[in-house]
Length: 417
Image 1 (cartoon, rainbow, N blue to C red):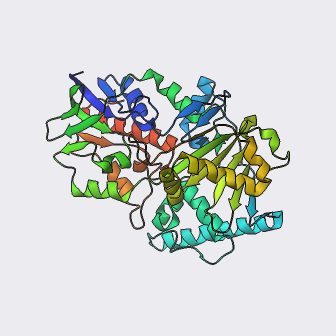
Image 2: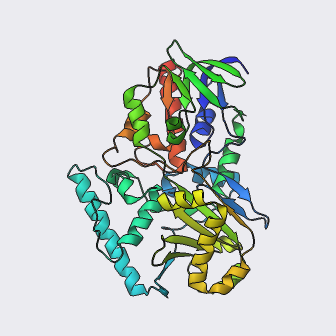
Image 3: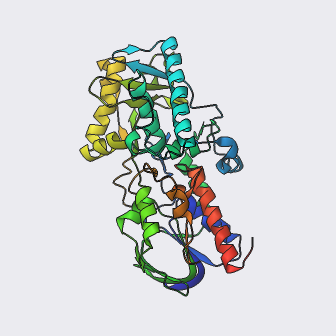
C-alpha cells in the first residue's frame, strides 16, 4: 500500500473517523489506518443471540444538546431515548433497599461533595478527588463509585480538574440501537485500511513517513488518533522520539478501566416496580451497578470500573460473570442463578488496540490535556478524547477533537475549509 498523500490518519475510532470525514470534504488526499479489524475503537456494538444490540463500550450520548452524534443519529434513523440524567436508580445496601428519604440525603451529600471539589479548584488546587472530599460520610463509598464510573479510575487517581472541567449538561441519552452501531454507520463514508497497524512514524521532516506491515506512506503530516494507552505502550515508534513534554503528557493521562458484563436473563423475573438500575453494596465486596432489562431486552448488565474492573478482567470471564450473578442473588434471591443463560462482556484493558477505557488526568496533571493536544513541528497533530479539555472520556469529545485536528492541518497546509 506504499503511497504518497497529504495526510495520514492513524486510528479509526471516533476521532480518526471524524478526521477522515473532514479530510474527505477538504480536497486533501489522505489515508486512514486502523490496526484492528473494525472501525469505532471504544464504540463497539455487538448483536446478541436474542437479537438485542449490546454496547461493549460507550452507550450514552452525553451532554446531548452539545453532542453532534444526536443529529447524526436522527439523520441515520438510529434510535435513542431522550431523558435528563441517567434515569431512576435504586440502592441495595447491606441487605435492604434504601428508602427515598435516605436517597435524598445521598443527593445532598453529592451536592456538598461537588461544592468541595469546585472550591478546591477555585483555590488553585489540582489534587486528587480522594484528598478533597469528605471521607467519613455514610455515602462516601457510593459517591466514590460514581466518580469511578464517570472517569474509569479510582478517586485517588483522579485530578479534581476532570470533575470541574467536564462540560456536563446533564442530558444523557442512551442509544437503544447501539452507540457503536451509530459510529460505524456514520464512519462508513470513510475509506479505512483495516488490519494495518502503524509501527513507526518518522517525522524528522520534511513531512512524515509512516511504516506499516503493508508498506510505507509518505505524507505532509500525520494525525495521531490512537489512545494514550497505545501511545504509552510503545507499539508505535516515533523517530525522533516525541519530546519530553509530550511523553509526560501521555503518561499523565493514563486509561482507566470500565467493563460491561451482560447476562441473558428474562426481564420478567424482576419485579415490575424495580428501578432501571441498582447499585449493590455489600460488606467485603466492591460496589457494582446493574442495569435491569433495559429497553425491554432480556438482560442484566453489570458495570464495573477502576481497579475492580482490572481485577475482574485479570481473573477471567467466569469471575466477571459470577460477580454480577452473586450481586443479583444478593438482591433478588438465589433462584436468579438458574435463570441466567449466556453472557458477554467487554475487556478493555486487554484490548491491544486500546489498552483501557478512557483517559484520566492524574492529580496535578489536568493541564496535560492541553499539552497533549498541541501539534508538533507542523507535522504531527494529536486528537482523541484525552486531548479534549471539556468533553474528555466521551465519544463525542473524541469526534470534536478529530475535527479540530483537521482544521489545524488545513491552516498549516494553506488549505482552508
